[in-house]
Length: 274
Ligand code: 7PJ
Image (cartoon, rainbow, N blue to C red):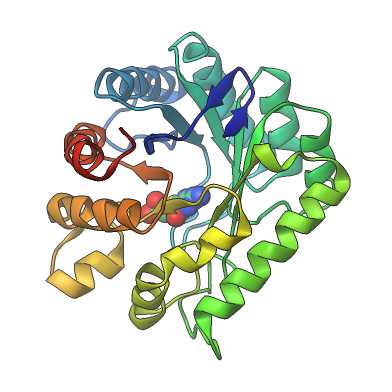
């Protein structure tokens, strides 16, 4: 079971988290208002397509991405969170910043998705006083430099150990186990071999006793394996999502909600709980 703000999920079927990026649209010159409206419209479309959760982010964490100020990030995400407040699905804020978490929690977000696993000062405390779920993700290094030389002795064991320690830290501070989600962080300070090992052994995270979220959608590991540009990676992303679910993942973070929903309906009919 997962508790996430206004929502309780039995997790008898996997959940789909749709990605809503709130970053300036280079194709429009309408400024903030247009960016906000585009993001809200995109979120509503993903709900129609079958998203269970919307993950709203104002700071790109892609390899090499530039940093965004706290003020800028808040100005991007808050109007979108407000615009999607009654969309009928859980809202997740994708941020590493404690101040952004606090602001988002105060307007009622149901989940915090932190690629930094609540390691920023005050981040755990920000979650403690709320009912929101939190996704604790593993990464090695910082988005700007993490892909330069990812190095592990045993990537599966090291990711497991890190996630276990972050669960312990969150629980010790008073975040109930039912509110915690873990994520191996595909592509975050990992080369192709590391990513493949983590997906092969995804099942090994099950013993930590909390739901596993994966983000594989359109990622470069898929492009490297199948020689695909980013816009060509939909089918590869679906294959990865199906594999992840068969290996125990309970939340799948994706761009292509409709395609993922259709595929997971088949998986669930055959492999799901009756
Ligand atoms: C992830 C994420 C992921 C979680 C991004 C991209 C890069 N959050 N944010 N897990 N990836 N929890 O979507 O390509 O894998 S940004």
